Length: 119
Ligand code: FES
Image 1: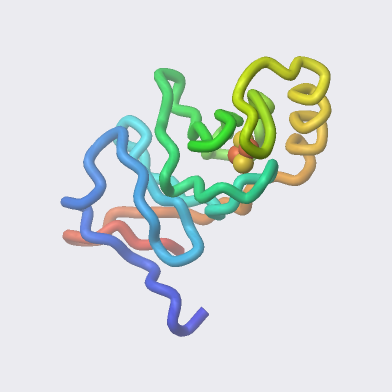
Image 2 (image 1 turned 60 degrees about the vertical axis):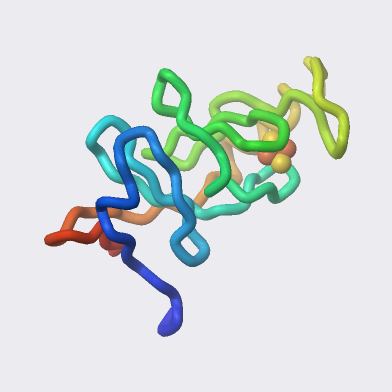
């Protein structure tokens, strides 16, 4: 972990944004910073390229799995797989059921001076 960057200037992380910090997707969820591991539990898309939705969930850029950034739990399964994007009801439920147990890792992210620091 010695080479892993563990901070980002707070100015680069306005509310509602998500950024990459080393192996982590870091964001500001309505004034509360969060950090979760970057690889989607479905097919490993980079969650630092995802977006926060209206409920504050982190949405995967590939098939829109949704994660609770406080717990790392997948709260909605993917809508598609590989290059297919669309409804896959049974599959979506299946992935969500394992996503409930294979959570993203969660790290504390706090404001320290001008930076957001991962602990
Ligand atoms: S890779 Fe994230 S939902 Fe498919």
